[in-house]
Amino acid sequence: MTEKTVFSRIIDGEIPAEKVYEDEHCIAIEDISPKAPVHLLLISKKPVPRLVDAEQADSELLGHMMLTAGKVAREAGVGDGFRLIVNNGESAGQTVFHLHMHILGDMSMSEQSLGF
Ligand code: AMP
Image (tube, rainbow, N blue to C red):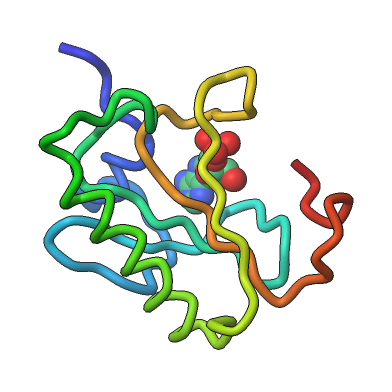
């Protein structure tokens, strides 16, 4: 059996996280190492390793996550200005192989300020 990702362990309550949102398909938590004043991670409950590993059957999940990202950003007070980032693969900086979206807000929108 493949080892659980750190995000699966958070979803299963095995390790703590600052959870800001949860529904049947995804959770949102605060990033442990924030790159912006608001840095949330929207994580799929289904452990899809990378975006490219998602299948046709995951279209509803992906659509739901996009809509939820907007909702979570609004609730965090950054609905009018945030970036939504998915790192796909090690060469793109992905470190946790469990589908997630970075919600970055309340920041100057320069590339440099992203830090990744
Ligand atoms: P990525 O590089 O796109 O795979 O993003 C993984 C993100 O997960 C990084 O921004 C990490 O800071 C964050 N992260 C890793 N472990 C934890 C954790 N236990 N709680 C919250 N965020 C985490």
